[in-house]
Image (cartoon, rainbow, N blue to C red):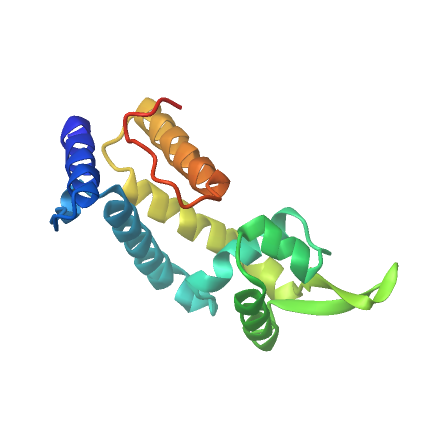
Amino acid sequence: MACNTLLAMEIYMASNAYGRQVVVKRQDSMGYQINHVARLFAQALRVRVAPHGVVPGQFAQLLALYEQEGVTQNQLCDQVKIDQSTMAHTLQRMERDELIQRVPDPADRRRALIMLTDRAREVQDDLVNAALRVNAVAMRGFTPEQVAVCLELVTRMIDNLEADGSEEEISPREET
């Protein structure tokens, strides 16, 4: 399958260079497949965390705050890779849902630090277990080695895309 995907990418890139329209099959598109998996993960997570009054859009922020609370909105944006406007909206909803509270930063009273509420701490184990169950369902039938390789490859894709600040096309055959 990997060879077919690379071949499809090469055909797509070469054909576009000559001005021809090319159809790429969804099953051969890494972006489509990863996006589809992400939507399925979010859907499965939504079902499991909804009874706790949490939605998947709040989940990354909660996980980051479970690791370290008392951070600013800017710091949280950097940690979970979400833009400021989306984060502001999400934090408003989390505050409304009594998952977080903002407290003045003692070092700079113009800034607010984001703190978890007792309610957020009470649901922490349930939320983490829900995520672990979704991961287990998704990785059913995988060996531990396959899970490790999958995580390694996805992490490499994330690193590649986060480092890509240009509009240049890169050959799929280029070595990393």
